[in-house]
Length: 119
Image (cartoon, rainbow, N blue to C red):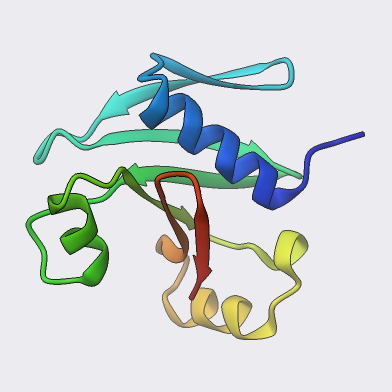
């Protein structure tokens, strides 16, 4: 049985943050973990059901509540995608992607592997 979307996000978060892995392994695929140039945030690009996603460590220098959690020591990861229509079937998400002309849009956050909050 294939893992669900939520299980996949938890697994990526666990490998990148909890295990500090150099790559996220999903099934037979291996996705390298890189660091962003400007802030040195951990990021991993991966595929779920044919959709390209990015897991990005939270920038703790912003004013968001997610950044506040990161500053307090929580391991927060933002998941982004250019289109989640096939995965979520969420009409408003598809519209937000169309309006952004294909730029990455936030779809969820996770902190300490316990919670997924959908935008």
